[in-house]
Image (cartoon, rainbow, N blue to C red; front, side, top):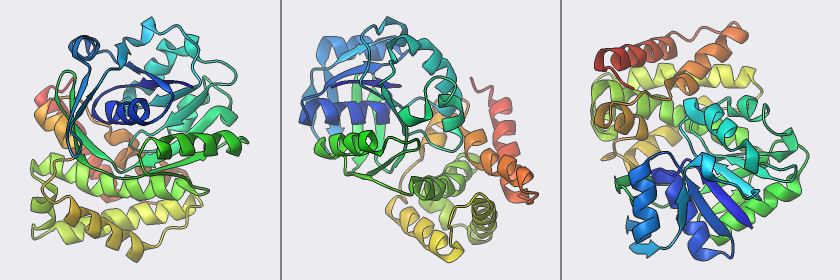
Length: 307
């Protein structure tokens, strides 16, 4: 099986590494960071943290990919998904499966512009990784991946889940992956956005005097809108899950913090807190906390001149 990783930053490279290392599939990493591509092709992908290793793996720019893909794992930033799909449409065939593991919600609508719904698999991952430099990743937390085909091709969805599980990524097929996606969006909508605004670790924010009220209001809005979307969300269960996750990651700076504060890049806020605002409007549900969080992140992007 030929597997492309479309967007080979920390998480994309982590997934590509595991598939290349532990399965018979051939992996090609696609990215636009030329130094990253060159280092990987020259020295192999260097892995540190929970895993210490180096693997020989091919990397190139998206427009350089020519062989038709069996599987494409899309791992771009949300706002770059459509341009990535446009760049790689030449390697997408009628039987190519797409696995989307992006943060946030609403990506299936973009993917349906390029492939049939039966080729789309949505997923969620809680693996944690960072870039130590070009050609180097640090795996900071091992996790799981949930996968579901959202069309009528469960067989291929299960095949993808088995491949990822064989790769050591803790994958499983999930008949209700949208629940897992909404749950992760709530984690990101409380932790990523707030640590980016406050410029702190997850633990520092959760230990602050007003965090409990802020988190409570955000989760109430997420839960109410999610239920209107047909997702079975329990408020108390979500609160418990968020606090448990926060305790486990209390010393961590999430990906949005890394993008905005460390790298001065624009964030995925419109696909996280902003997405629940948009969905709330559809159902005539007010989401004032998520709206102000979205606005404040955009204001911070403007002030910092984020690119």
